[in-house]
Image (cartoon, rainbow, N blue to C red; front, side):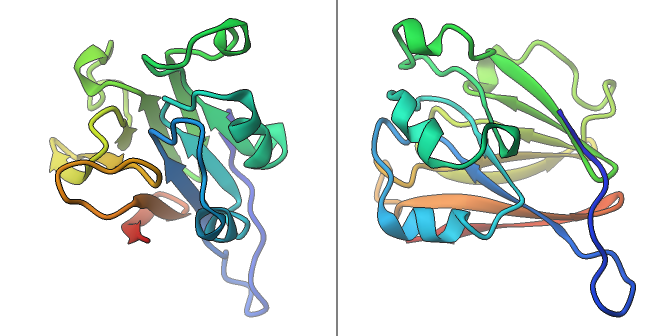
Length: 166
């Protein structure tokens, strides 16, 4: 997927491309998560969706990209890839459910952000110029973490990120 062009604000500066990042929803999304996502230009889901209705509720198919997690079973999930490359602004993003199954060397592939899930725990680690971002789970967090997702803002080749806790 390529999402390069974005609009400018009234001053003529490019406005940020805003990406909502989810994982491990397991068939449930609270209204406050949906309220947050409605303001995003793009939604990336790192798997363990569990029900096709979740993907449908996230928005138009051209604005939602998802990968298949280990709990995404059944006919509805057969079309989901196990990994996805997304170009947003001048940033290449790689999405996979389980980071232990990564099939590339992100730095060699010019990937700037790797998004994964599976652990249900929010995390962000910079390594060799690559951000490894796990949004946690907005539905079933583990180990005392609050329900969470992440947000990425991209302008050109620069980005900022944050976890959003509910």
